[in-house]
Amino acid sequence: MIYRMIKENVYSVGAIDWDRRIFDELIQIPNGTSYNSFIIKGNNKTALIDTVDPTKTDELLDNLKRLNVDIDYLVVNHAEQDHSGTIPDILKIYKNAIVVTNSKCKELLSEFLPIPDEKFKIVSDREKLELGGKELEFIITPWVHWPDTMVTYLQDDKILFSCDFFGSHRATSDLFASKDIYMAAKKYYSEIMMPFRAIIRKNLEKLENIDIGIIAPSHGPLYNNPEFIIDAYKDWTSDNTKNEVIIPYISMHGSTQRMVDYLVNSLVERGVNVKPLNLTCTDMGEVALNLVDATTMVIASPTVLTGPHPSVVYATYLANALKPKLKLVSVMGSYGWGGRMLDQIRGMIGNLKVEIITPLIIKGFPSQEDYKKLDEMADEITSKHKILGIIK
Ligand code: FEO
Image (tube, rainbow, N blue to C red; front, side, top):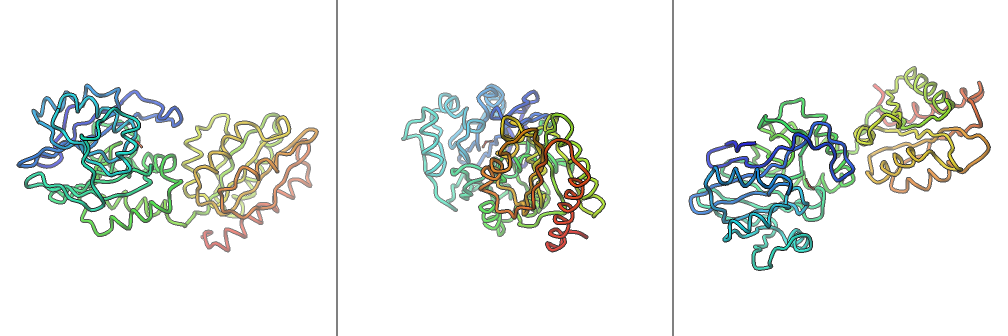
């Protein structure tokens, strides 16, 4: 994508990856993504903020040529390859460029890339760098989503270059986001940022006194209404959950499906919102997305070789790793001749600070007695949601 001017002497020079469909060989990105990088031209010095994924090096270099700039400072907000992978190519061409980053990021970059020590300038929290008429300020914001992450603030134009923080996987020629970015940004948050909810809250507090007019993340469109994404992050990272139950499940022969269908109806009758997620046709990103606000997760599975179905194991592992703000968990499912599914699932959710709702594991198809127990499970969930004050 050809460079675009954001403000006078501030340009977006990165690349859009229209065709990418998977990130880290893990996260489905059906709408592609972008690797945003930025040029800031001061009266005396020019800075490049972050680079692009190595697959898009030529696009970045073409834009730098078009702008006819020299690079004095290469600011690196984060060491992950999609932002740092082109650093060696930049240093080869722009021989005087100095890599400006924090000490943790330098440590990681030195392990991943052939960058000589003398090319680094290490900056600390709130340190400033004068470009001549434009001044950069570096704010260390760790764990969004690696230990090295920082953001760069250009006070003169009120632009916060936030790298992964506030990003979204969306390939678009729109420079600025419209409100329809919300779900893409939320999915990105759920998959990448959610495990670091507590420290992200601290980082949001740290940004509170900064006058931000534009947030320029390194994935997806920019925000010229920064409160839109900041408020969303405040909501997602808060301890507040919604009146929502998610049921990630698999059913092999229909027994678990009957239980899921029954529980869904039973909860809806009681005024609880439910999202059944059939894992045979649900992307794990959807599971992550639905974990952002849910109060309760009911894991539902048939028994396979004494334990839960492998797809349910994956979803449970993911939920545990993402550390969502769930308050309640239950398990339901079926078996033919035995198994230890319940113990195995319990052993997989150690990260979740949840109360366990009475589980229900049945033999074969559900009986009338089993349906009664599902009503009791729905009653228990509803009553806990009422105590939490989330049923309107
Ligand atoms: Fe977009 Fe953590 O890299």
